Amino acid sequence: MPGNSFGKLFKITTWGESHGKAVGVVIDGCPPNIEIDSLAIQKMMDRRRPGGSSASTSRKESDKIQIMSGVFNHKTTGTPIMIWIENKDSDSSAYEKYKDIYRPGHGDITYQAKYGTRDWRGGGRASARETAARVAAGAIAKEILKKENIDICAYTLELGSIKVKKININESFNNNYGCPDNSVVKEIEKRVSDIKKKGDSLGGIVEIRATGVPMGLGEPVFDKLDADLAKALMSIGAVKGVEIGTGFRVAEMLGSENNDPIEPDGYRSNNSGGILAGISNGDDIVIRSAVKPIPSIMIEQDTIDTDKNPKKISIKGRHDISAIPRINVVCEAMVSIVIVDHLLRQRAIS
Image (tube, rainbow, N blue to C red; front, side):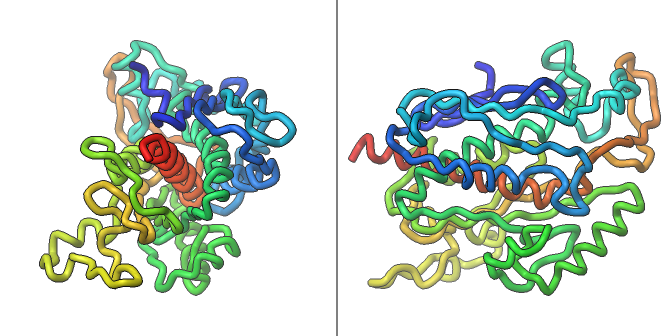
């Protein structure tokens, strides 16, 4: 079946292309009588909106949401919620010269192989523009989580090989890079500026932290909470790796080091990242996403055209230098959707 939907009880289906009339989402399974704060939803959308930092595209999209159904008198009705986000600043002209050339690092060649056709305007369905719909759905999910005192936030852990030295989540809202350590912001700004002048791009790491998640969320065996979280994050186009808790470093540890001792008040450490045997253990859930550099770069690259002739390509246009920090809120949204889905699934059996 086409993979445009995600979730079991809280199910989202996104639709639309980068340069179409709009993008949007249908949310099915949202419980009734959830109060919807339109300002909170728009504030979350604004975090993904283009133009927030020097790493961002110059494309100007207001990302104003229109809730078309499923909400009445500021409360959910229990029926499907449809959200519409208009594309107002799409300019396809910059892509016409690339329509018969496969851009390295993009999905052009794989979409063509799968469907025998593709929307070459900005990447079509494969564009990061699709993630605006995910953020809208995640904002609805966060309204549900707010009632349960569950908080989920994402912040930049690393950008362009510059790593944060300390984490103060509040600081991540006070700079243009979602960075929880203001002491490295200037260094990041310089790195972004230098790479931008060279016509290249940067990758990085986003950390997502969920607090207040109750014990017991997650399903054996194939719908483990960590498995669904990994799938949710890996479904974001620029994400190439996910780790939970101590992650890949567990390969270097002894069992006596990796196990989290249990005390009457909780856990002494959190190497598990808040999940044991695929089920939440009541501790903070900590996840990291590795984000690849934006593939659209001005540096000349080798490729082929649709007839397999060798070509050179230098991509010009309105592109991000890094998916970070705009991708941070997308990661936050996807984690929120998974937690809500598993919260509803747990209620169904308890």
